[in-house]
Amino acid sequence: MKYTNYILGLCLGTMLVVTSCETLDIELTDNPNALSPSQADPGFFLNAIQVDFAYWVHSMGDRTGELTRINYMSGRNYDNIYSPDSWNGLWSSAYRGMLEDIRLMNLIAEERGLQFEIGMGKVFQSYIMLTLVDQFGSVPYSEALQGSEGNLNPISDDGASIYSAAIALLDSAVADFNAGSLASSSNDFFYGGNSSKWIKAANSIKKKALLNTGDTAGYNAISNYITTAADDFEFQWGTNQATPDTRHPLYRSNYTNTGGGEYQSNWLMFSMINGHAGNTDPRIPYYYYRQVPETPGFDSAGNEEVLECGLAGYYVPPQLRGDDTPFCAPTNSANKPASGYWGRDHGNDNGTPPDGFLRTLRGTYPAGGKFDDSSFGGQVLGAGERGAGITPIMLSSWMHFMNAEVAVTTGGDPTAETLTALTQALDKTDDLGGDTLTTADRDAYVAAFTSDWNAAGSTAEKLDMWATEYFISMVGNGIDAYNSYRRNGYPRSLQPNVEPDPGSYPTTQYFPANFVNTNSNATQRTSKSDRVFWNASGATNLK
Image (spheres, rainbow, N blue to C red):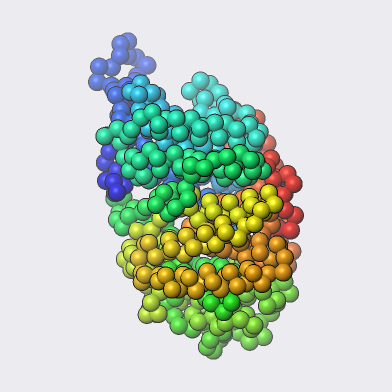
């Protein structure tokens, strides 16, 4: 891929655009040395947009993954996590960054008839706007990016109208991909200029939007979408450490010279360790790397310095005393040993002990880290796949999980689509390195899942299993997990917050401070219990 070579072109493109804006009030004629925006290469804009988009999706997916226990979340009070200030960077990256770059790129691309590049921009723009609505509800759209026209206080559009506009953009993008091809001067970091794959990606994003709105007829009417891993919409990171740093963001935080800088979700590891019908999920050595063979207080003597909650007699909150949830480590007295897996519980906001070379790290998938071959050793910068991971955006397995949900809501049987989704998710796991996940191991796990599925006493129990596997497949981007959980409330087995009364689960987020503090038409919401338009009648059992 060409990502690692993008930086020089990006810098040159930026110089061209900046130079075009440099005029002095005392000039009486046009500066003959200045370049106009039309003389810039839209490929330079496209490079920046694609990389910024990957970072943005990763960051949004990281936070939503925390809320759905795919990732560890620090914070005992839901109202205090993700303050208005904490959203400033993502908000600016969306509006002042990518959306503005798309607007500028289009000015040039339209003059040159570069329909393919315009189509790519529309896919990015639609995904960004859908995600902003999913997080915040009503946000600026129709009056956004009009600062040069004197509108510094854009009004917010209602979420439903933005969804309609984003869906129309996706339809328009499909037409663009059918009408043109990628210019030789442009880079496509996702599909290498393959229009058929881009069309499937656009249609897949449209399907997820229609699922959120409950339009199952419209959802089922789309047949040309991502159904196999060959068409997965994902960003491939590189291994460069600097100039530019192209490594997966999760690799950077896990593999450092001072040890791991991130804790893993005890709930997700707990779910994978226990698996189904006595079979541990075979993906776990790809998802996680254990730096030690034993977890203090569970497989060996307690160690107050590094894992205080593992000490005998340590207080266990009532909501975490059941056999169906972990506490302190990804296990409990009724389940398998922790075996060196070492994470944190949902909401734990304790300080950081000297456990950087002890805690569990990200593995090969999706972070490009180290495969867990039971070698057990402290890992540093450069270990494993050196950061050559992926940020998934829309995967075939996710589409089949969504198909299963639609089957349930329309009175059908979700079994076939769920099993297809699970099989594809398992098959994808070894794509980034490590030992080959054998067909025998895959089939054994699918058979174990099927056994538990057939033994389930209700549709609700099956949906718990469906949602758990769906969430496991979404490691690397929890945006759609957050949407799914708010839609239907599954899985019900999500680990409760360590705080007995953490407040209401956030069904939306506070608006960014840099939006409400600088826009006279913006007002901060008073509660995170507001609901986005498509979730007005969503699940109420969220925790």
